[in-house]
Image 1 (tube, rainbow, N blue to C red):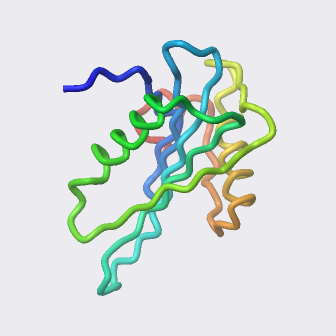
Image 2: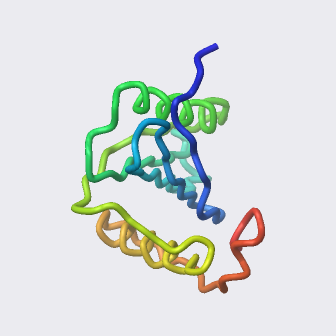
Image 3: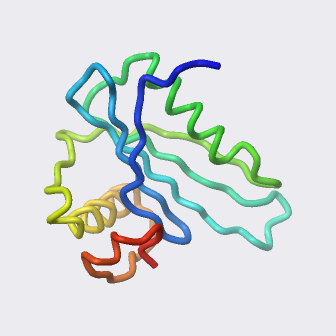
Length: 136
């Protein structure tokens, strides 16, 4: 079994969306992963999940392999479901004041959805909703 050089912190979990911070052992910078479930229950082709790797730099190969491994671990056992990962290059890293400004995560994810032209409106929630596994 391969040892991961990367840590994944789930920052936001909703029914159709998850957002992770990607931390590297040998680098101060972070990247992010956004999982968006299209929820196609009546499709004969099954469901589709889009994964976006969000970063302002190129990931080291070992960390990129860790990201691919996480995707496969999370989504590889979904019956009748496909997924694909795209990269979204941003100008600067997202930074928030953990644990004092968790609502900044909601705002940033909504901006990402808009940038990606994904027509989803995130629900309103409070700072205390981040104390639970899911924010819904």
